[in-house]
Length: 527
Ligand code: XMP
Image (cartoon, helix red, strand yellow):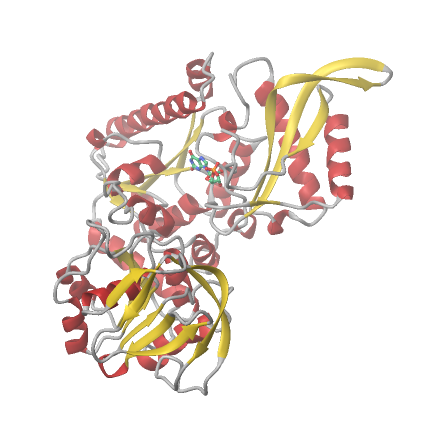
C-alpha cells in the first residue's frame, strides 16, 4: 500500500486516485496521524500531500517525531508534494521562506539541473508543470540536492536519494503537469518497487471477508436503499455474504421522480433479488413540509421524517420476526470519509460519525448501530466498476444513473413544495427533459441533469390565448466528483427540442430557461 497523508490540499484525493490508476493501492489518511498508526498500515511508500498552510504558522500540522527516521530505517520512500516538500525540508533542518515574488501559481516551465533518481536519470529536460505555492525552499537540509528549478530560479524538485526522500514543489497529480504521472509512476514502481497489480476484484473479496468477520453468523443487518448507485452496490455486496439476514428499506417520501419508486423497486426485487421493504411515507412527509420555505428547514424536516420511518421499521422487525439488527449498511464513499476527516489545522473537528449518519438523513446516536461501509475506500467510478463485476451484476442502467439528492425534488421546487401542483409539474418536466437527453445520446456525458420548478409565473401565448403559467429551469452539469462542476454546453438544437417538447407536453409550463452557472459560484442543486 502507498499511504497518502493529507495536509488539506484540494488535490489530495487526486493523488490517491492517480496512485490507484497506476495499479497501486493507496490509502488516504489525515496528516496528523501518529507514527504508530502509520506503522500499523504497513506502507511501502508514503506521499505527503500539499496543503494551504505554511510551516511557519503555529499549529500547522507537523509530522510525528521520528517519522523520517523510521522511514529511513525501513527503507520506505517518501515523496513530499508542495506543502509536503516544505514540511520535509523544514523538519529535517532546511529553510522554507515566504517567496520574495509572492509565490508561483498556475502553469510554469521547470528545468532539471542534473541527472537524478527522481527523474530516472534522464538527461536534463524541460517540462510544463502546475504550481501553486506562496512559500519556497531556500536552503536544503544536509544530504539533499536540488534537481530541478523554475524559470525564476526557485527550487522545485529535491532528493536525498540514498535516504529515499524526494520532494516536488509542483503538483505532479494534476493533468497540467506534463510528466506528472510519469514521475509518480517512477516513484511508485521503480523507486518504491511496488507491484502494479491492484484491481477492483480485490476490494470485493476483502470487503466480503471483512463483513463475515464483523457480523457474526446469526446477526442481522439493515440498510436504507436510496435508489442510487452507492447504496445499491453496498447492499448487493452485503447481500452476497449475508443473504436474508440483510433487511433493506426503501422510503417513498413523496419527493421522488416520475415513477421512480416502481422502477427502482423492480430492479431491487427482480434483478438484484434484494430483500427490500418499501414504505410509503409520502402523505406524512408532505404534511410536514406544508408551509416550509427555507431550504435548510426543508432538509431538516425531510431528515427527521426519514429517521421516524427508520425507527418504525426497526421496531417492526423486532415485532414481526423478532430480530434486533445491530448493524447498519451505508454506501459511504471515500470522498465522504475525507470530508469527514477535515484537514488538520482547518479548525473543524474530526466528525466521522456525524457525517456517516448524515448519509441516511442524520440518524441519531441512540439508534445504536454499528456501521458496515464496504465502499468507504472507493471513489465513485470505482464503485461503478465494482457494481459491474459479474459477482454483483448491478444492471448497467442503474450503474450509470445520475446522482439524486437525499432530499429529492424538495430541493428542486423552490419555496413551499406542497403549493399547487408544483411537484407533479416538476415530475413531468423532468421526465420529458431526461428523455430528450437520452434521445440525443447525451445521458452518459453528463454528470447530472434535472429540472427546477421556479415559484414565479410568466406571461406567454399558447394557441392564440394569453397564458400566465409556470417557469422551469433546466440544469445539466459535468463534474468529476460533484465538488466542482461546469454547466453542460448543449447544442441549440437540443435546447430547442427540449423546450418545445416540455411546453407541448406539460401544458401548465409556458417558459423554459437554461442554467449557465458553474460550481462555484453556484451549487449543483438550487437549494
Ligand atoms: P450541491 O448542490 O451541493 O450538490 O452542489 C453536490 C452533489 O450532491 C448532491 N446533493 C445531495 N446528496 N443528500 C445527498 O445525498 C443531500 O442532501 C444532497 N444535497 C446535494 C447533488 O445532487 C449533487 O450531486
